[in-house]
Length: 464
Image (cartoon, rainbow, N blue to C red):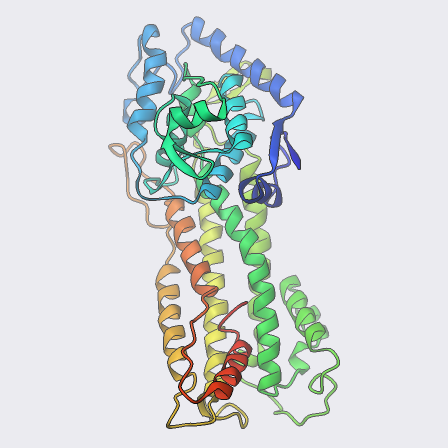
């Protein structure tokens, strides 16, 4: 599969194909022309001595420091050395590939000002499987994901480390083995690689992609739980949800009814309560709200994937360079904080259904804790303990990161998005939501163990 990078139509699906499925990419011819025209403009302005942030000035608090003309190339190199200050475990290579894809797409719009060889080298690295070693921690999600993106830029200098064919080696060795020339960094090149919230945006796109099937599984598991607890299914009549008007609620109610089609409950052949608890009755409203939140978040992420996050931005048609703050990660981190909270909400409701399956006072005749040998065997009593521990961790992780700004760079950068914290904690929330417990088979209870496994799947605590 070959994906054309145009700067305007990079979707979450395409991002996933490049990062996880190793789809090949190529730069659109129009984008190549735009990149070259923008670079020509930048070089002309350098020759004319125009003051441009991050090219012939320092950065951050040093933005008022003017650099000598013969220092511009060295400055880009030192810029990368300075900013490659990440720490912690390495990111999965798929996340790094996704961030590189996003950055290439920004360059393809023709407003970044780097040399074409920089963008082409990033393309070649993706296509030939050279993936820089990048640490998880270091970005504050403003001025771009500077620390992680700088570790990518190190490889463009023939430095740092990179994976090639599953092996970690020096950046130069990886590039040499892949047959990729080291482009080095000239004026503007370094900042054009690291400027922009590409890492947190790419990770947010992957999070949304992986959340979609989980929501389907949540609806499947909820449907099975409704059957097990003989729920009244009138609250799942789509007319109720259409009258309120939320599309996610309509979608979720319809999906659950489709899964229960042909069953005795939906055909009203079984006696049910007039009205069930909220955890059984309001599932479409809750999961539906997550569908709606996810649609909004996807829109925000795809706007950012196809937007310009540089500083400065070069507008060729007007022959002007403008400094601003398009690198600010808040437009992505704020909605993604919300989506992490939304997923936690689904898990909280899931645990409440697990409780109803276990509790003999609520389980409409199911054996206590879903075991035949109550007393000798504890059934799923402790499985709920584990679920509760996970839920508390979910709630802690759901504290928004986007309001946790700490000023940086001598208060020049006095509000930052902390979007990387959002991205990292959302994946932990997702991991908890997908948690599958290991089962201990109790001696002499093979049949009971098998039955317990089946019923536990009904509980929708495991969303698989």
